[in-house]
Structure formats: C-alpha cells, structure tokens
Length: 249
Length: 249
DNA sequence: GAGTGGTCTAGACCACTGT
DNA sequence: CAGTGGTCTAGACCACTCC
Image (cartoon, rainbow over all chains, first blue to last red; front, side, top):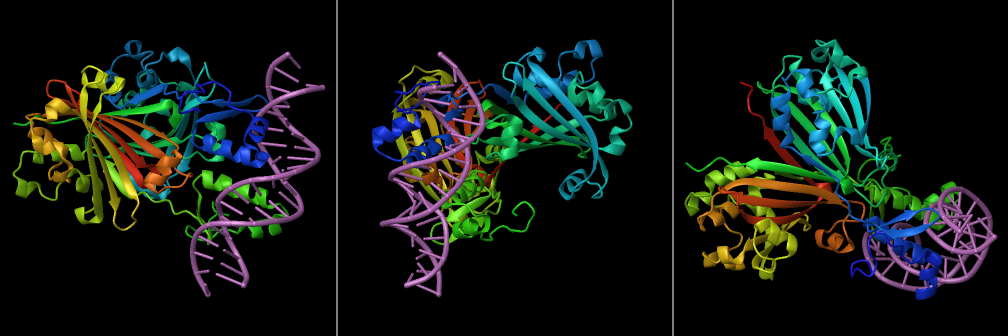
C-alpha cells in the first residue's frame, strides 16, 4: 500500500487491531509485520496515536566544496568572517536556524588517534564535542568529536575554552591563529544502524541509519593537525563530494 | 557482555532457552532482546546453529582519488589498460577476486535523470546494471545502475552490449571512445536501512545499512554525460574522499 | 534426534495520547 | 475514557543444522 502510493507519506497505516481483523492474525503477528516496515524506515510510530508513513526527508546537505571558501575566508578580519562559520556554509541554512552546544575536555590519545596524529599513545589531546540542533525540529543534526594535540592548541589559549564557541570563521580560522595552514582534508565515510544511545542523542528511531565520518585534516607539510569524528542522522543528511579531474594534455 | 569484551566477535551468544532460564522470562521476551542487538548490527543469526557476535568488517575501500589515475590511463592502449579496470583500483584487491555481472537495457528517462542530463523526460537512456561479488564470500559488494544518453553512447556500438564487459580501462576509457573527456565527478551520498529485497540482493541482514551514491559525471563543458546509482553494503564499505585545498597566497 | 532459531496464537497489563 | 502502541506470558508447530 505504501509503495503503490495508496498510503501517502504522513498518513496513518492500519492499527494493530485493524490488521488482526483484516488478516485474521494475532497481535504479535501484526506487530512483527509493522516491525519490518519500521526496520526499513518506511513507517514511524507515535506512541498513543498510531503508526504513520514516513516522509523521506533530506534536509542537510554537507558539501565538501565548502572547505575551499572556508579556507579563503579563514584569514579575513573578524567582521568579515562573522556569520560565516562552518555551520551555515555546510547546510545552506542561516545561522539563526541552529542552537549550538560545545564542550571542551582533555583526553589521553587512544591508539588510533595517536597513530594518525603521529604522537605517542596517551599524549594529551584537546577533545571538543559539538552538537547543533535545528530550532524548528529540536533534534540534533550532528554530533562532532574534534581532536587537537593539546600542546599545539595551547599556543592560543582562546582555543582551550568553550566560551568562545561558536567560533566565527570555523576551524580553519582557529588553526590559522596557531600558524597552521591546511592543505588537505580526507574524510572516511561509513554508515551503520544507530545504537540505542545514539537514537536517544539524535532523536531518531531504530528504522534509520547513521553516517560516521572520520575527518582527517593535514597541514601543508602533511602533518595531521585535526581529527574529527562526525555522526550524522542519515535520513536527514546528504553528503556531496566533488572530484575535479586534471585535463588531458 | 559484548561491549565489555566478555563475548568476543564470532562467539555464540546465549541461546533463547538459556536466556529464558537465566532471566526467568518468556521466549518472546528473550527473542525481542536479541532483536535489539540484531537491529544494532551487533549479532547475526545462523539458522539452526545459533546467534553470534558479529565481527565488524570494513573490507572494501572506495577511494575517490582513484578517478585521477583512471583518467590518466583512459587513453592508454589496451595492453596497458588490462587488469586496470575501475574495480581493482577501487578496492585494492586483484581482479581475480571478483565475479562480474552486467546487464544492458534501454529505458525512458525519468524526471530527475532527464533534468540532470538536460534532456527531455522520456528520452532513451542506455541503462547498464553491474554487480560484483567477491569469490571468497559470494555476497555482492556493490550494485550499480549506470545511465548514458542512448544517442550519445550509440556512437560506439561496442558500448551497447554487455558482451564487452568487464570493459578494460573502465568508464573513463569508454567515454573516451565517444570523444568525451570528464572534468568533474560529483557524488551524492546517503545511507538508509536496506529493504527486504536489498537484503536478498546484497546478502546482508536487516541489522545493517546500505550506502546509496548518486554519481554524476560531467565533461569539460559541464554537460552531464553519465549518472550512476551505486548501492553498497555499509558494513563492508568505507568511502574515502580527499579535498585538496588551494594554498594561501 | 537434539538443539537451534522462525513463526504464530490467545490472552494479559501497562503507558501514552487525544477527546 | 477510548484507542493507540509497548511489553510480557505460556504455550505450539515448523525449518534448519549438526551429530
């Protein structure tokens, strides 16, 4: 009924008692049938009211091409950078549409972070946790854990506290204040079902996926200066990556 | 038990009767608890034998940087192209490790395909369906629907039949035989739970996600010449995208 | 044949939502 | 308060796997 369009997005699907009567099955059978649709992300349940056809909704477009403009603006004076943080560029939405959270912490480097940074395991890292939620929906649009080597970040004490967030001009400007110029950003993208905790954090149901990005930023000498782990609700996110090819001859 | 490491990947988790006895619950309760773990992709079920902790396994790395080398090789003579199709480069595995399927068809352009190609809706498209399965596992590693405007592809009749697949040298060589030079490849990436049909096709369980890529290739004049829809099992795939930034000054 | 998970029934009580 | 879904029980039969 959904795939034929008989049930449109937003419409309620037959209730469990309906299905029991219509197909002569028991409650558990009707429930597990609905469970399949939920697992496919075709329907969502609203406690106490019913089960509804989900409207597929890609709202946030995350285009890697924004890094180019972000870098170009990273050295501009504050006034010109204002309102041009990473966030607005990443989504095409205005800065008013978001609420931000930032938490700063220090942690010893795990094996894989240390290996990527090229430091000793256990070295002190500045770990910054960001989340942004759209004011309309209330649900977070991303969760980010960003890592910097503490000794490097400490050269600019402004970077060590969450009070200066959201930072106007984005990470590339922050790194510039440390004398760092980024040359390449590599993103490793995977996807998987959300854990129960992530469903909670992102405000999504089990019938969805999450996209995990490990973003590795290297300076002009190839040293890794920042690593971010980015968690995105896949049902509201589209990633865009453009590869420009060298001309022949 | 899984997250504490008490149950290692590959190990069997307690059976349903075990759980019933241990926690004094009914069968359905024990089953639905296991269902949560399955939905999170933490365990997989082997009919008749038991439920086992899944080993997280990223095997296929799909690096967009391969396009650069692919383009450089696209004009080489056949001997030098051999064994250097898109497949091997994309995965790092040898060409022996795969079995290929290709099916060719023509279809009228849907709204969105026509809009992207810049042709009339209903215009004839060459639709090529590819799949590759690793010989070790038997399960497909990707499903690709590739679209070309039929009138364009028809300039080289070799491109119209599946008999010449797998084509040595990849799509960039195929386009070269049409006099087309690619300048940019844009990939739009989303993820979602698999449908029941996709579980079947890809040989994956419901406790996984699929990655969907729409790949749009444009020539040096900005015309879209190829569109591909790529479906990947997310539990065995990692996408890699590198953004090179222009130097300051 | 014994043990595994897959499916199903017929009931029960509860929490949440809207009227 | 009626209707929704969330959870649970105590049984049953079946298909698959391995010994």
